[in-house]
Image 1: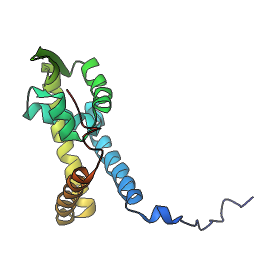
Image 2: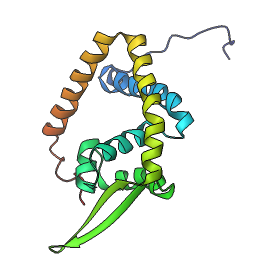
Image 3: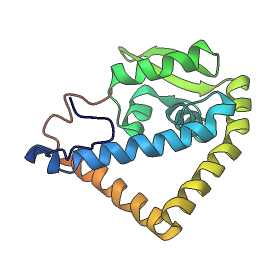
Image 4: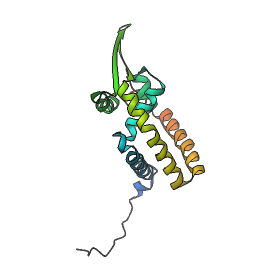
Length: 165
């Protein structure tokens, strides 16, 4: 058994040389940074993004929200559950033209929580920019948005897993 002071050099399998590992590692670390800043508002970074989208776009359909977040219906419903349980988001079920549709909006409590969390999110943005540099942060945002769009468009299963609502 190796002693705790000895460090072993791990071999990296070829498959881990792909882009997935560093993107996931960066995503986890960035999410952790934002989550720490948003903790006083009792929101995760994902929950804050949803509140921000609904604040700016009241009455978004499940399809619209899922498409913006690039989440399929089941994942979106799981993500929305704590927000509706905590009465931050109101779900409206509409029927018409033979189809069910869910739309979402913020409750008064949700608007207040968003207002509380917004300056915390701004502080997280500022902390991230200070850690990586503002110019790099801006370039990263543009590049990752482009990657997400490109991969989404090239996904042959995109229509099978697309959000419905």
